[in-house]
Length: 295
Image 1: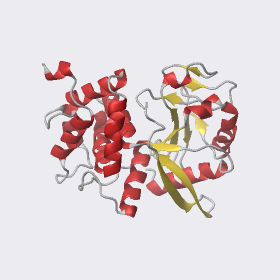
Image 2: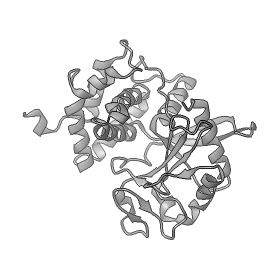
Image 3: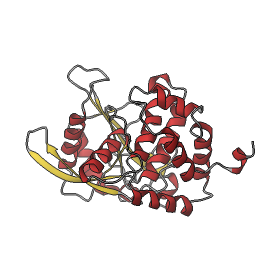
Image 4: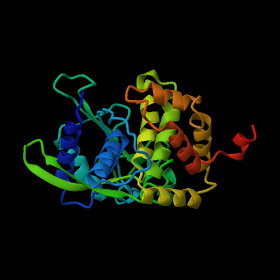
């Protein structure tokens, strides 16, 4: 199993290779949540919930590119070169936006995977980027694509800069800056990820995503909460927001809903976790649609 320290080293190695470029990386996924929690602990910030689960393990790096980088594709050449130089291989069927680096044992568990993602498909309207539900493909091609995430409609809003420091694989110390999505953005992405994995045995039936939702809210600061409410109001009525509201109502509105059951089934769940407060906060950010309330 890949350790958190291995993920940090892998990310530092990649960012070191592109250090003299304009490429700024937004770190999502489980590792992004881990970095956010570590940052909040370090600055001793007041957060929405006080009871946190322990960080979950992951062997993925979900790296988001701002749409502007894909539109100006020449800027992505150093990233493609760095991925190849560091020994990553393309994943068949997901060429140029998923890469894997086999571990010493050659198993999936000790391999490190990179997913390259970006914002919604509509961000590329009127640009040279060829986009569909699966991939955003820059033109001219530079060997890097990205998987568009339509629910990340606020991807570039309220980003949190974090200093990431440690040792490169060479042993040399180095630090740089990465960005973490705003909790509202993170919650949107994880709600849809839970829906997509609800019946997937290979993905623990969404248990990790349910836990991630709790951790995102638990590490939300007061200022982030207020900004999240503003984002909710700014995008009220948009189809993806309406769908998120439906997902909260269907899966996370009471302890008996399947999302809350999956959360409690997670090996990282602790009985001290503040589930009632979690449910209440999710419902405030994503109030039930009228159609759900009336049934």
